[in-house]
Image (tube, rainbow, N blue to C red):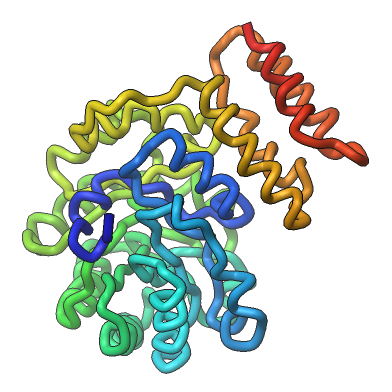
Length: 327
């Protein structure tokens, strides 16, 4: 499946880019559960790609497709080079982060602070579109600090719309660049879904996704009545098996979905392969702790993995033993 031909389809439901969480191991787990949900990488900065070992940052398994690479940066030329690296590595979409409010990101002049420079963001989008033929998208917020009226976000969206951005993902909160931590910025600014809906009305042919405070597929389906796509984050990380119904409910695919036990069994060869490459067991199993959330034995599953995956010599038998604890 190529996202270029199916961007509207793949974007109906996506996994948000989350630092330290949406790495290749978690994405592999998600893909075992849902065939169609669009998966995003963690944000990778242009500096990391251009001045480090870019292959280390971009390596992935084709099993993870459809998948998008999220970039952090503000220099059009640098972003264009990184977009090209991403496309050559097999990624099917390049997404520009214009939503992260952390101090580190602000100091690098990217993330949410770029909302104050819509013309520069448009230049970045245009530069990337000139060098790749895969979709270029933008993830942003509704505003920053005191710049939070509707006219502000409409002007921003219009800037990227004019350069033919392929999709915009709106986190339905503004960000406080001063005074709130990134964690607080995920919860304290109020959700304003109505503004996202209004953007869709004002830009009806723009592919528009919504993000923020969406915890269930029921909620996702309600948003899809008015918007093109829904992005979910922490809810999917803490309970990844939510995705088990996504292919049927969101993508109209009635294929048989493996149960949680089968998902774990399917993960074992992957875990063995990754460990032979030098990946510690605990770095993989930490993403699997919520797989049995709500089922008998879920606490025993989590405890066994947490207490044993980090021990010297721990291997896939730790996972097998934890699986036996599920009722």
